[in-house]
Length: 142
Image 1 (tube, rainbow, N blue to C red):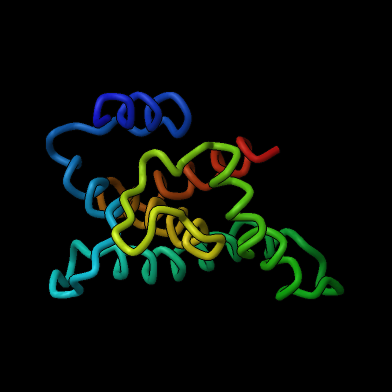
Image 2 (cartoon, helix red, strand yellow):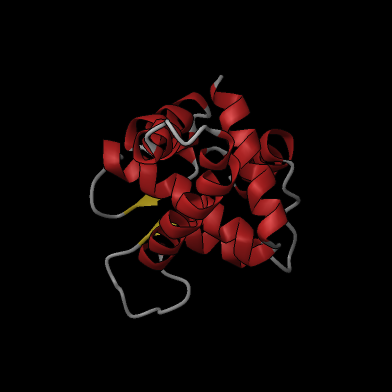
């Protein structure tokens, strides 16, 4: 499974997972019932990923629209739950995420997974790589 995951990340998102950053991505892809792990918790990754996604979306998409556009509507178009769920489904990410709460990944959990992935990329690399991954995620959804 890990080998398949590494291949997927390299081919679809141009992310090279190695022994130095492997734990970051594995932590982001495992939802746990225990919230005691402060830095390697899915909950932390999804919350910080949501903030990062909002920032990147503002920089990439909202700033390119005229002042007549509704910035909230523009942001929702790019980072709303429906968009993130669509990306999750098209990339067939369910096989890489581990859920203890149920056997099925719900609609909102799919969005959370994309956010966790984005934040893991930021942690393992940098903001530039996270921005590139966001571009690739949206390209794959086209």
